[in-house]
Length: 141
Figure 1 (spheres, rainbow, N blue to C red):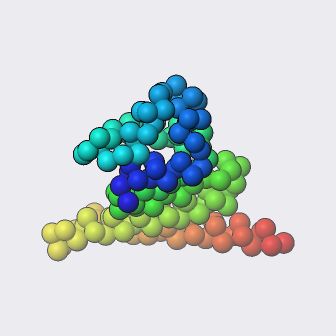
Figure 2 (figure 1 turned 60 degrees about the vertical axis):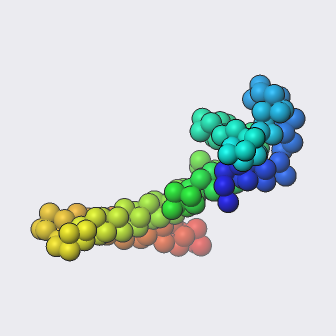
């Protein structure tokens, strides 16, 4: 899915007119963000993405953008939700560990320093997972 298609899908959550009024743009400009920029549409400026997400309460544009970049979007539902933050740390530390392994294997030879970095990132991933499991167990009590 392309970004402009995500904007079109966003209209199921907030009307273009309401969005235009809130962010002080013309309704026609909002509609152009939902059209292919290669034809008659306009590219959505990156700085509008978090604004539109907060206003609409819909993460579709960010989810799509992350997917296009080969990643995933894990929202924080509540800044006080430590369980969600711990979960995100697990995801990030596993991504970091995987990237470290891939980077070290580029030349098909892992140096002592690269091995040390791999062990460190895997350890961080394990610790983040353990903290998450501990928080779940404490919640059950």
